[in-house]
Structures are given as C-alpha cells and as structure tokens.
Amino acid sequence: MINKTNKNPRLAAFIGGLILLLAVSVFGQNQSKPNAKILLIPLDDRPPCLQFPVRMGAIGDAEIVTPPRELLGRFTEFGKPAEIIAWVKKQNLQSFDAAIVSVDMLAYGGLVAMRVHETDDAAAMQRLAVAREIRSLAPKLKIYASSVIMRLAPTGTVVNESYRENLAKWAEISVDEMQKAQTEKLEKSIPAAALADYKAARLRDLKINRASIELVKDKIFDYLILSQDDAKPKGIHVADRENLIEEIRRLNLSEKVAVQPGADEVSMLLLSRALTDKYTYRPKIKAIYSSEQIADRVMPYEDRPLRQTVSFHIKAAGATEVGNEADADILFYVFASRFEVGKANKFAQEIYNRFYQIPANCKETLKSLCMPRKPFIVADIDPKGDVQGADAAFTEQLKSKALFAVISGYASWNTAGNTIGTALPHGVLYNLSAHRLRLNPKNVSKARGREIYQFSNRVEQAQTWFLLNRLLDDYVYHTLVRPEAIKFAKAKEWNVFRFNDEQTKAVEEFSSPKVEEKAWQNLNRINTAGSSTMVCDKLKTFDFSLPWGRTFEAEIDFQLVCRNL
Image 1 (cartoon, rainbow, N blue to C red):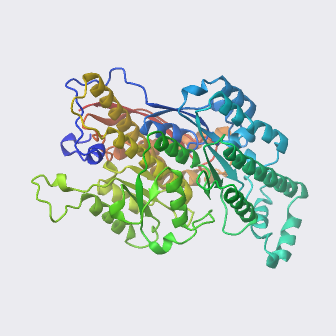
Image 2 (cartoon, rainbow, N blue to C red):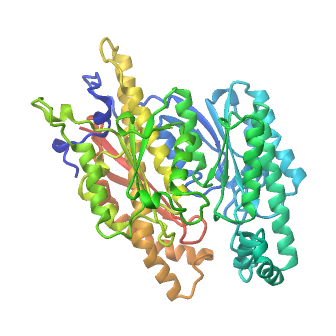
Image 3 (cartoon, rainbow, N blue to C red):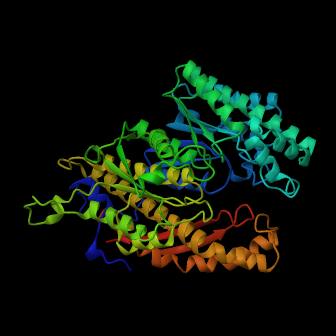
C-alpha cells in the first residue's frame, strides 16, 4: 500500500499551490464528463494505435471515440474502409472538437494493407474523398491526419518467407548504381509477381501521400504527418520522401505538413497537437541526452539521427524545442546508453538531482517551496534494436529513486520513434492538464470547486493507469517475460511470429500470470497522491492478450481501484 504520509505529488509539484476547494469529498459520485471529444480513425487495432491514444486522451481530459474494433481488421485481415466511412457519416461530426484520421486505414484498411496492392489507385482515391465530405458536414472541425510513407520490407507472411529479406535488401540497394550486379542477383531470387506488386503498392502509396498534401492545401486537413515507416538511411524510399518534401516546400506548407520517422505512434502525437491547439498550450521542451555522441547516430529501423527524430516529434506534439534549460517548461530525458557501463545509474541520478535539488540561496523553512521541480519526461531507447523493451538497469534505477512517482511521461518500446512518440505526448498532455488546473482558487463556487476536483481525479487516475501500463508492457513483458515466452514457444517448435489460435492462447496463459504478479509491485512505485485527494493502490481486473497472435506486441488492460485519502 502506498504511504500517503510520504507523498511526492506529481500534480502538486507542477500546480504551484493550487487548493481544491471542497469540504466534502465528491469522489465516487457522478463524475463530470471530459471537456473535449475527439474522433479517432486509427492506423489499425494494435495497442499503440488504438488503446494508447484512447487512454492517453483521458490524461488530457478528452473522450476518444473510435469505430467498432471489428471494423479495424486484425494483422493480415485488413480493416473495412467502406464500413468505417459509413460509421463516420452516422456520427454527429459537429459534436467533436477534432478528428484524427489515418489515411492508410481509410484508403486501404490499415498499415499492413498499405504494403500490398490489393486496393487499386482509383479505389484508394475514392475512399480518401470522404475527408472532403467530413469537412463539408463540419466546417469548423479541426482535422489532423497521418499518411505513411511505405517501408522497405513487406509484412512477413508464410507466402513471402523465402524471399522477404531479399526483397527488403533489393529496396535498399537498387537505387545505387554501384550495386547493380547485386541488385540483378536479388531480382532473380524474388518472384516477378511479388516484385511487381511491391512496386505497384509503392507507386499507389506515393499518390495517396501526394493527395494527402493536396487536402492540406485545400484546407480539408488542418495538419498532416507523413510518417516514414521502418527504413534505413539509404533505399528506394529516400527519393519518394525528398520529392514529398519538395512538394511541401513548393506549396509553402512546411508549418502544416511534417515529414518524420515513425508510424505506430503518430496518432498520439496528433492527439497531443489537437489538445494543445484547443487550449493554446505551447510548452517549451529541452531535450537532455544520456550521450551527445549517440544523439547524432541513426537508430535502428530509422533514416535520421536520433536528435532529429526528437526534434521532429517535439514539434509534431504541439510543443517548442529550446536549447537553454532555464527557458524550458518541461525537460525531456533521452536515455540511449544502455550498453555503457554505469550510465544507467549516472543518468537516473542526474534526473533525480535536477528534480530534487535545493538552490543554495533557498531561505525557506520548508525547502520544498524552493525546489524548481520542472516536469520531466523519460524515453528509454534501445540503440541496437534487439530488445524492443526497457533497459532493466535504468528502469530499476528510476524505480529505486522514486522517479516514477513524479514523472510526467515515459515509454520504452520498439523503435526510437515509437518510444519518443509515446513518451512525449504522454508528458505534454499530463502537463496540459496541470496547466489547466493552475488557477487562482479565490471566489470559486462550490459547483466550480466540485468540477475542478473531479477533473483532477480523472486526470490523476488516467495518469496512474498509463504509467502502470507502460511499466507492465515496456519493462515487465518485453524485457522480462517475453524472452521466457519465446523460449516456451520455441521449445514446442512454434513460429513466434505467427501463432495459430491455440498456440496464442497457450502463450497468453504462460505470460499473463508472470506479468500480473508484477503489477502491484510496480503500482506501489507510482505515487497516485498527486492531487492530494485520491489514491489508486489495487487492481480490480487484469487482462493480457497477444492481439496479433505473436509475441511482438501485448495488450494489457486492467481496472484500477481508487479511493479518497
């Protein structure tokens, strides 16, 4: 149980003396509704595309409304654009503050669908035209969109298993005249029909990328992210990307169209931008790296240096990057040094010292009144791309120093872009809610006090849920349990990239109790007394699943039990 007498409040650290005026607790009574409502058409049904933005929206005090999950497809079963469009048209679009739209779900049926040429160019264009209908039905609705630039490798399937890597290598080197002989050799190893389909999909996707830019020019989309899916510094994608950038410059749309690494995390970045736009909140963020040298390296599955990826994501999230720490509203710690001995403890200590340091000129009896306590976000990045989860040493240092009790945003999964694009909007939205709570409590009516109180509790409960989910998913599952699950599956000679339903259930039953048993221990590291009004210290339900029948991603869900202090 969390000790409420030793509180290290998150919200209180950033609100600066806010007093919630209520003599009688209202927690447990009918809660007021979130203050924003956002329509989300996700990239697909995986947790980062669907579960994360829905839960993160609650941190920003927003209700996220999505199409029924059965319309979004599952892995190689594509989503249903026609039915999604019909669902959208039935919504009261004028009741939403904003819409976040995956062009790839609308045009093809999701990320996996956009990598093959099953949907022809004309059909994709026709489906995308619904964006113009949305604008005509809701002229004042802010529409934030994303369109993926196709990655080098096709999605791994049983059909392409024998030539998939060769096709990815062909896509990387075929533009290099010096690699002509190797390119020809690779082409002979790839079925002609498969290569033709790959090329056709790339050309169609580029047309849709361009059409998305045109929708910005025509003021249908208010903001667009063209996100580069898994890639490398060289390859067939580079010319596509540079041509798109030139088109954006020609149309003078550089402030409304971003081209950056990533894919799965983009809806979260757009969610952050939508809410910071709504509340005119523009936090200044200073990035602090565990290694300046590593910050200049290109991370696995990306085509830009880490430092550039961070800058792109800060801007996309609706924030402003600053170079001077003194000018920053939020500090963003980027840890990418897990293979340097002693660096985990050193960087965690640096975070601790910056947050808890007491200025030498502090004359207050209560030293806490002098603490700078700038909000901070942490991204734990795998610089080799072979773990896809949190670094054990660094995570344990953050836990032992009680930093999860005061952290604003955190993530550590898969690529650098995925991690950054989760941690940043998480922290920005949490501080947006804290910003909205910074007010003078004098002359606040009882009704207004109740509303503020309920808002504070909603946000703090959502924050606790998301932090625990990150620890259970990024650390407990990916770092600790997933290697055991893979070993369990391989011992049975199962393909860990493609389980059948029976195998999926068996691996879920193996993994679930191992993750759940760590839940309370990690919850105990998250001080939920940020608002000094409530604490969440138990789980009512717990569910663990492998949504795409592979160990690569887990969906972890639970219900927190919260109570008044």
